[in-house]
Length: 119
Image 1 (tube, rainbow, N blue to C red):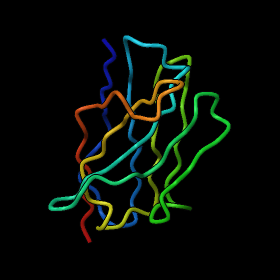
Image 2: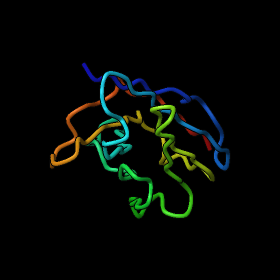
Image 3: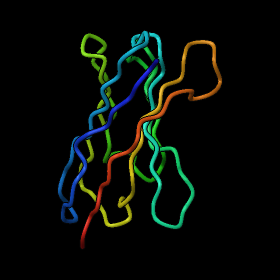
C-alpha cells in the first residue's frame, strides 16, 4: 500500500516562502515520477510541478515558474516543493502525487496540505 503524506503548509503573507514535503512509503519511490498539484476553493485541481524519478527533468506550470522549485531525495523517499515569493493566488490545498514507471496516470495521492497566502 503506497502512502503519501504532505506537510509544511500554513498561513503566510504575500512575498513569504514555504517548503512543502511529501513523504512516501510502501512503494518504490525512486521509480516514480512525482508531482505537486493544487486546488483552490471553487476551482478545479491544477498541475503545479513534476520531477521524474532520476531528478534530471522537471516541469512547472507557467504560473509558478521562477518562484517554485521541485526536488526529491530518493534516499528519504521524499519530494519537496520550495515556494518563494508567494502570492494570494497561490492559496490552495496542495497535493503530491506519484506516477509509477510505465503508467500515464498519477496513481497515488496524498491527503493535501493547506497553504493560505494573505495580502
